Image (tube, rainbow, N blue to C red):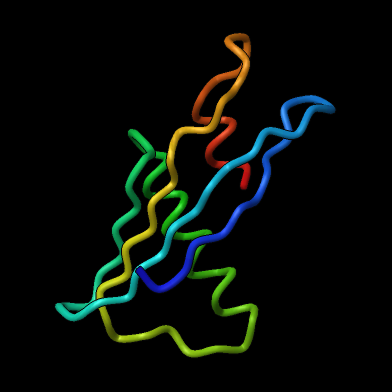
Length: 86
């Protein structure tokens, strides 16, 4: 694992902790997002590329894996809202 960080997502005015783990490894260039379902994965890939490009760094030609463990969200909040808002 390259990096592990702690962040938070907002549901209303309440912050919920979210952990993010990133690994850049050998293999064909690809982005894999683990922990999201459906179209949220495609949106997360686009957000990652945009955020990385905005930092001024070059996108690595390696396999990138991002793990977003499920946060502890209240039952009234959609899980996908908690995960993709980070």
